[in-house]
Length: 328
Image (cartoon, rainbow, N blue to C red; front, side, top):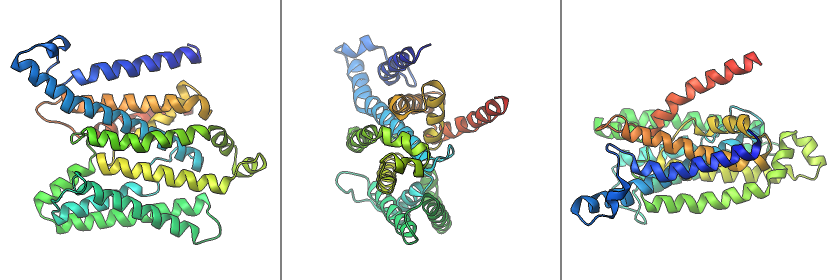
C-alpha cells in the first residue's frame, strides 16, 4: 500500500471505531431501536448518549494524547523507550490522588471529584520540582532532566507505598483500583477538559514539526540549522508534562499506549513528524478505544481497568519488536 492509501485506511478505521464502539457492550445496541418511542428505546438512548459516547470520546482523546506525548518524549530524549511517564509526572499525580483517597476528601471542586484536583496538583508540583532540580546545574540538559525525573519518580512511588501501608483495607483497595487506570468515570466534562488541553498542544507540536525533525539529528546539528534547542526543549518538557498530568488526573496511569503507538506508527507510516504526527494520534485514539471497549464488554458483569488490558498488550509487543529487530 502507498502512504496515502495507508492514511485513508487509517482515517476510515477511526470513523468505524467512532460509529461502532458506542454500540458495543454487554449487549449489542441496535441502532434502529434508538429511534423508537418505548421505554426500552429511551433507556438505550440514555445509556448510549450519557455513558458510552462520552466514554468513547474520552478514550479517543486520552489515547491520542498519550500517543503524541510518547512521540514527543522519544524525540526529545532520542530514546525509543521514553514514555509520557518517564519524568515522574504520573507518580506525582498518583501521589496526589492516593493522598486525596487516604484523607477521605468528599467535597467536589468545580464539579469535579476531589481526587482529580489532588492528582493534577501532584502532577504540577512534580513538574516544577523536576524542572528546578534539572536547571540547578549547568544548563538544562536531557541527562540531568532524566536523572531528576527518575529520582522524583522513585521518591513519589515510595510515598505511595507508605500511604497504602498506613491506610485501611477499603482505602487501599480504592487506591489500587485507581492506579490501574480506568475510563469508567468518563463524562462530557472530562471530554471537554481533555479536548481543551489536547487540541492546542497538538497544534503547537504540528507547527514545530520541522524543528522536531531537526532535533532527531542531534542538538548540535539542529543548532547549526537555526533551531533554538534550549527553548524548544523546555517548551516540549512543560507541554508534554502538563498534558500527561491532566490525563493521569482524569483517567489514572494508563501504560504502554505512549510507547507502543509511536513505534507502530513509524513502522506503518514515516519517521518524519510532518507525515507521522497525525497517524500517531489516530493510532493512539483507535488503540485505547478498542482496549477500553474490550475491557468493559468481554468479562461482564466484571469490568477490567483499561490499564490492565494495555499492560497485557505491551509485553508481547516489545517481544515482537525485539525479535523483529534481531532478524533485521
